[in-house]
Length: 196
Length: 381
Image (tube, rainbow over all chains, first blue to last red):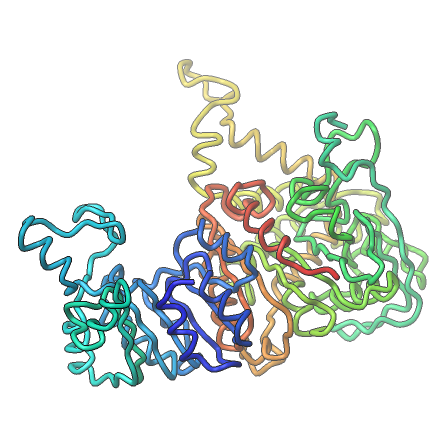
């Protein structure tokens, strides 16, 4: 299981109602439902993924997050999760606010674009970073809103969003150590637990 | 019977009849002392009696959903693509029950049946039937078949309305609700189309105020016209353009005479209308369209669909089709929205299809996969 998902799991109470924005094939909700008795609902736009989620027995709604979430009432979920999806939406700030309207708590994970590899790539190669984890070119990438750990926290402050806890994932033991003290440079994935 | 289909077909099926004595109090206030339902079953009921699936038919459907009635039968049941061994509603796994609804004209008690009091056909005196009444009669059929709870109740359009009614009228007797191309209630436009269809029937002199059976006449032209109107609304603009375009069936614009000119679409509609008028009863058609018009899931729940759904215990699959303008995706989204607010487990899929409302009957790959994936996930032990 992905490291970020393990961290999220530890933040979700048993019996919670969880909304997963961009749930993909439902892997995370499936794990969550197996490990702690939660009621999960996923939102996904890709029908191939939705079919895989249905096969897992996950409840998933075909919906484009970019077209809004107004069909979800205020505080209708305990937790709203968006794992590795904030960089693909058109208005990350609006989605964040919607997450915290619908859920009592929001959990967001994203790839940190301030990681030293990205910086070196851009500094020395002079092009947008392409890697094993981010295999796209600038013109065909679904990732249209990359941000750094610093950028994200700036947004939270500007929107008066409370950061309840955060966790940074580095590549190995050593970089995890560094990412804890200097996240903007060493974290590969950032995980935030938020409330309004 | 087409040879190639034999492997994945339920084969030859025989309709059965169940007679129910004892009063049935209808929503309209009328009481039927007894009634009969005609139904077919496909597959085997398992030991725990937990693998039963109920199919609810739409406006012009009937009990014959799958298989063939005899060796020479050229037409399979109306949803044969979806029901059978290895098909989305897999008869190797499920025991499928499909009935003709009360008020229908294919064997179940309805306007063409004999009224026990007058010993004449009911005709237009047959009581008005609501979706809730159908669910009640279907529950009695379930009792008769000793099915405590359905693994799934499935229906499209008017059938989908029955499925939703099941979920709130008998929450403990339905584990999965599959609601396809349906709505919480009809729109004004939808009721308008139904009324035009009814007026077409009533305007036929052979309708004789609904008394045509005792006059030994049949309002074929009115019924055909009603069907033609309906048929246009079940298709999309694009589907009709693709299927017929402006192709001529006969005649030509080259000559000075425009008399013999007939477009393909005209010929098609006439054929559909004629075929239907030979198979369906006019009073039944009026009754079914009325049931559609009157349906409003939330009416008894302070006009609040969330409150209506709050009693439901089952999981839901809701499916809509992009070009369906009679039961558009936004109608299905209303269902989904109410289910979310009622904190129910709901899955929603909007299928890209050119065929309009008719799509719900057709083997469209993505739709096929959706039903198949969902049905595979249902536990029957």
